[in-house]
Image (cartoon, rainbow, N blue to C red; front, side, top):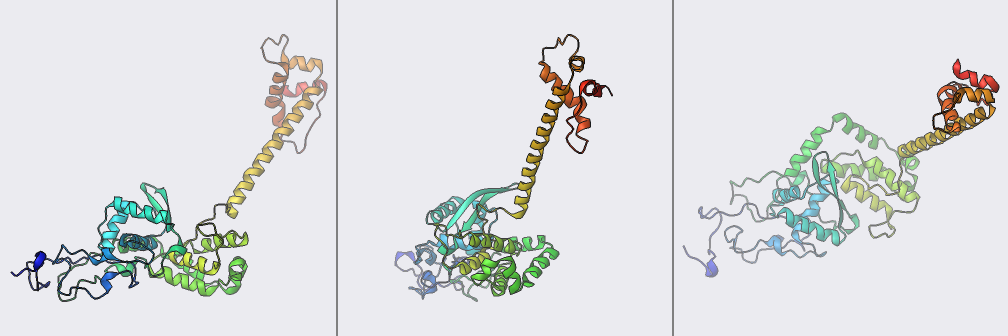
Amino acid sequence: MITAPGGSHAGVHPGVHSGVQPDVHPSTLACDLTCALASTLPPVRPDVHPGVHPEIPDDINRISCRKGLSAAQINIIGLLLAIGPTVTPYKQLSAELERVYSMIRSPGAVRRSVERLVNRGYLRRKQAKVGTSQGVTFTLIQEMLCPHIRAAGPCLCAPVHPAVHPGVHPDADFAPSILREKIDRNILSISSENSKRYSALLESLSEEDIAFHWPELARVGFGTVQIRQIMQRRAQVGETLEHIMQGLTYAEWELARECMTTHKGEPVSTPLNWVFKILATQGYYPRPAAYISPAEQAERDREATTRREKKAYEARREAEADAWIASLTPDARQEILGPDNRIAIPAAVRLRQHFRQHIWPDREKEPGPQMGGHGEGGANSHEQ
């Protein structure tokens, strides 16, 4: 065999030399911007094929992203666009990078890439737990994202590898996307009735309905056109619509209070685009920190009412106890305390205990405050 300088095999092509095993899974990229992916350009050496010359690095590692993102960071963003606000361990992100993009990164390397994205303001993360599942939830900062980064959805279940040519690798068997499997399981787990209900509710909305329920959003131009487009975008990645209406309510709350801001705390200049992109890509709108739902407010009102009623009840009982004790004759008082009152308990305390145990149960059943009870009548009532 003739070898070229440096150990490369001159004139060796996949499929021609069966002893040479090409890499049928070169890395792919979630970005479709040609300035980013070097492998989308004509190869510098047309006789060199990935896998045949392993000493030549994959072009995916030589991208030139205008935003300064690495290939791993771009693909991680693509995964998070598809995964949404679910609890995701770094180990799972690592596995999905390999399955979807054929990019091998350890969980530690994925964590470091995420930390760089957090430091640069592309996303926020939070430790979370759902049942026995522990991991991290991620929130992408929409205004920071490049529109050319695609979500890793069902359309990527068999990714196109630019260095693999049909006919040259006829036996290449691309691994199915773990994301596709997860999305399929999620879709199956959601009852058809719920799916139909959310879809029907959104489709039934008219411009008048939107203006009634979300007037501030309607004023900035949000309407049925945006609703339909959001539904189409969510359907493209196999996601449900159950959080869309709640997200509209959160956005409406922020607009009404003029507190819709970016992650930097600056006012959102175009609320229409802001709300649409978040709902279309994430399927939910983050809940404002100060937001209180009507159900929560009703529960708080009930608790406050209960506290006020309890306080009023105790005040009424103490007032009636004071009045009852003041109305006792000396003989009635002595009868309750006993002849010697040898127990070392103050008389006022014992009289109040007697009132609560023997007098108050009957008094609280009466419709109004009863301050009566004089002389022996008040004392004898405990004997009946």
